[in-house]
Amino acid sequence: MADTHHNPHPAISKTQRNLTVGYIIPRHENSLTCKTTYYDRSPSLHLKGHWLGEAGFETGGLVKVHIEPGRIMICPV
Image 1 (spheres, rainbow, N blue to C red):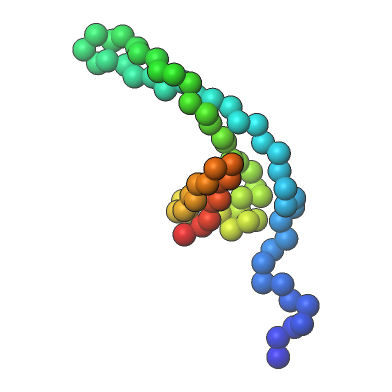
Image 2: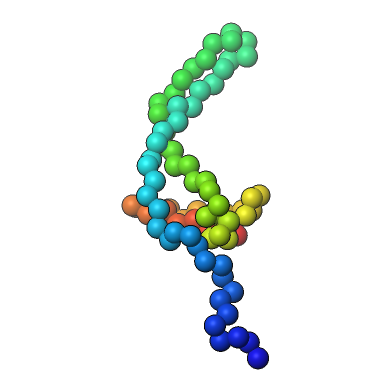
């Protein structure tokens, strides 16, 4: 008989996080002229930390990204 208080999911240290949207500046170096071209800034969001593993996102795992206006949902595949 299963333990009635058994939780199959490990606890997540913090269930809400506040992150800042930063930016990256993509660049390309022309191998013939050795000149670098910089493009417009692109929004960037960096997710990192042990909490990703706690939430079921393991290193090397695939994710599915659902995008809606004002919302991004990331799910392990």
